[in-house]
Image (cartoon, rainbow, N blue to C red; front, top):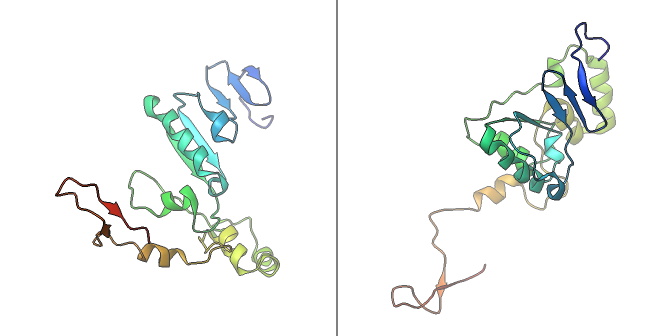
Length: 175
């Protein structure tokens, strides 16, 4: 902060938060679903490295924004085709503004560095870390596209041992 010419005066400064005389404050919240609850009406929530954050934490943070209309920003490089960051990035929800910046977009990263990184990391890690590509998870048995294509809303569930028309409860087969 010493490089800022007009530094805001701090009313409070500790390991987890900073408050300015203007009333603005920045709070670092715990990274577990069970301990993050109870904070309400933030104007801005930033989840850094969102692809590696547990879904439970993300779902616990969302209600904080309900009353105050705060903004949510997810920052991350991809980490496989899984989790809420992957889902939010790839869904058709137009409320999200998506910004993608790859290593080629950053003039501070040299081609020599990228060549060495690709050789060191291998294609899978390199494409995710430097070119924002969601790759198949290395521990996946099935490809994401194969799992998605297995779902079909037109297929009706199998009913065994009764029917709902005659007042008996239907039991659905588990496949």
